[in-house]
Length: 148
Image 1 (cartoon, rainbow, N blue to C red):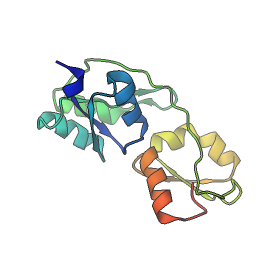
Image 2 (cartoon, rainbow, N blue to C red):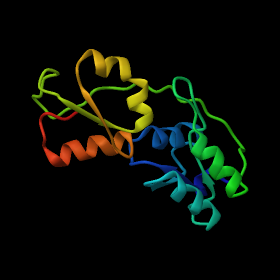
Image 3 (cartoon, one colour):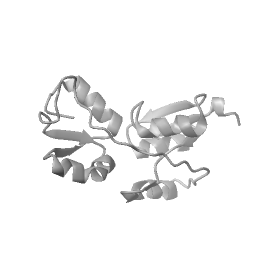
Image 4 (cartoon, one colour):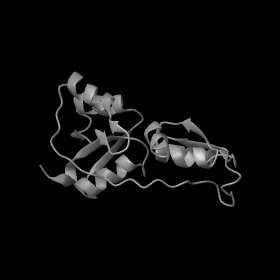
């Protein structure tokens, strides 16, 4: 099967870590198919709307991602490849916003867990959103200067 024709489902927005992993692992010729939830990713493969799913299974800091193991078992899917993506989180805010102005940090629960010490040290309130890239999009659209 040619990688240039593959449709690969992933959870998140374009620019998310999973989107990045699709391209790094399978090349720029694949067709990434974004979904809002991991369930929707698996449904996409089961319903033949995507050839493969690329989802996180393990996280060095956060441990196993049990929901994805459960979804694999429930949908009778199995792992056919592995890719290790180094994740490096950044605190992003609107132009001109200082770290002192930030009060609330939005991100995926896994990213917030990985950054707990940093968030606590700076007095930021963590707030769960559906993914990291989606959080950046929400902040950009809402124009709330106290959020990052």
